[in-house]
Length: 296
Image (cartoon, rainbow, N blue to C red):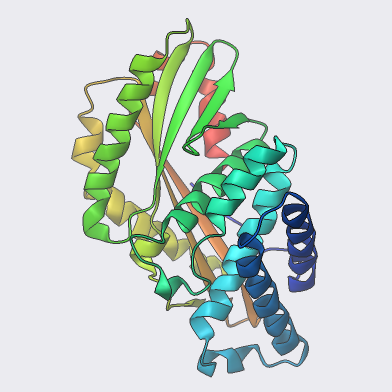
């Protein structure tokens, strides 16, 4: 498990990345997507203005508080995604970013119909982070992830339930999709599957800031993740197919540390691997893949 450190990049640096991303997408002929990106950039500039004037706390009574603070979260995500996928085929980038930017600027306006954007965002941020750790990751037409290594292929199905009561169903759906992936794979490599679940929307619908006294208090996010996992742990441990090697949980949230007066993007990842499945499924590279996932 890993709590991401406090970011060292300031808001202006994130804006610079997003402006570069906007220029790239405009050149690719993306039409409506950059509009949402421009909204994120405008909101980040407003946050930077409040920071430079020592008025970050005044944002607590801002009429668009939810939209502003989530622009910080999603702006940093888009910047990280841009760095992670900019070497891909231009048409792939265009297709995925069109999906990722299609939702509403305000997360509270998200619906079951419009949530495809932030679902895609989750898939892309996970891919970007895996690549940052040295993994060879491909994005399929459905934006599922495939981690490849010599003689091995690890499929990852990403789910982002809107409500806690939907977690079980979405995990079952992911497992069903993974079984189809296994069945369709006619190669001679070892294959396995991971289910990745974003619980950000479950724990924060878009209207909250995670406020702590000190940076170390951010570790309390781990308790939320463990609670959710433990509700389903019996199901996970009873897996019949040993190729289902585990679960990844991720949470992204705006956070404020009172001691430093810093508003930032907090992320946390928990990995639960099922018994010896990783090394059973990948007898040669099992430990290598395990170490890679633990670094997320």
